[in-house]
Length: 402
Ligand SMILES: C[S@@+](CC[C@H](N)C(=O)[O-])C[C@H]1O[C@@H](n2cnc3c(N)ncnc32)[C@H](O)[C@@H]1O
Image 1 (tube, rainbow, N blue to C red):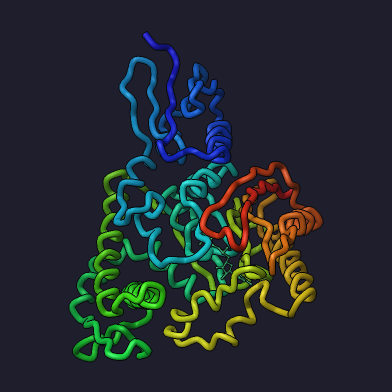
Image 2 (cartoon, rainbow, N blue to C red):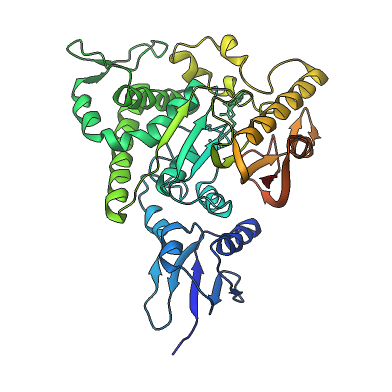
């Protein structure tokens, strides 16, 4: 009879950096293992917390204890609740086609690798489209997400709060009528019988459905009313999936707070967070405000006014780089300030290509972290897809507060 426990990775795990993270994930759970010849399976005779692995692992698909049938991890089940064609866009991850989203499986792994467990608090000072928040929530880890972009805050809220308000959202949809005649009109829907939604999860949900429809219209020329109805219905289905995954796997969700704050002056107390998972803005190369201008304008923002808060857009030419460096140094000091002693940060960062030349923003940031008192413990190389024009390679930096 087989005496060892066998672990198998998910079929979609294929890049070297994923194999590296899969091994780091096992080590962070205290598993001593031998790597199988395919590199995608592991065996262990040592002590193991099967329950913890089944609950938390991102890269392990199944675990077979000696003499037992293989058991699948929670993540294997979670990934199946997917209303899209893309394997990464399960549950609410697909809400809004935000450029530069994290790969959710990698974030789940990094949360574990930096030692975060249920009840801990993670911070993402650049929450973007909320990937860290969704993954932390699924793992029972509390999360504070910060972003200067009101669109990013809206996306992050809707992705993580709608599950608790599904019946209100469904009931409210009776009062929502798509109403566009002119695509430049402020709203793509109106509430019938003079019912205005107060600020809150119901309003957020329909506002985001509208922003997704506007984006579909501007990128794909899809009819805005059709896009609104189509996306709203798909969003309902994904929020339903979120509820079902919680119930069927008995998950205790972590709390999520999305803050309108600035990564250079975080509204977060000293030494209060157990870990940071983030990626800084690539705004020297990618103008976030321009990229989302349709949505931001429809939300009623003045683009030039809100641009000022974004890191990487101040100044011109060389001055722009030095201001970016200065801002990122301030962010590193803030990260150091809010981390508990000994706690870790995982930062996904790449060198940017600006007007054809590569700028070593990674080295700049490592230097900023070290002078702020964050010690670099490991660097994992990561190739990237989808942003070739602005960046070819990213690195995962693992830093620890001294
Ligand atoms: C690389 S993106 C984050 C993407 C995110 N990891 C995701 O999965 O969607 C960086 C984010 O930094 C935000 N940002 C720029 N300047 C900021 C500042 N001063 N404070 C906080 N957030 C800022 C941008 O709005 C953008 O959403």
